[in-house]
Image (cartoon, rainbow, N blue to C red):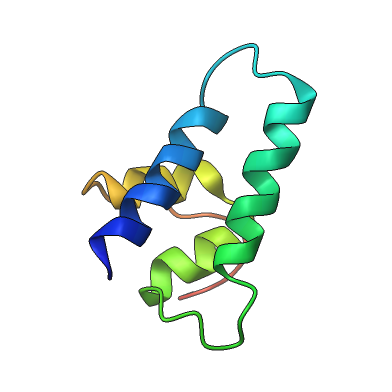
Length: 78
């Protein structure tokens, strides 16, 4: 993935994780992240694309930080 794009996504996810984020900031982060996956072929790694499309932002952040997100309830991979 393009490092500039990776950093842009990472910054939005880190902003979302901040306590006390104002509603306007929250909505702007979500809008920007939605734009990253808007194209049918976003070019994002499969897991990251999945997390962002389902708005599993905590998992997306863990993934970008090199961790392994825990299993969810969507049934993917089951």
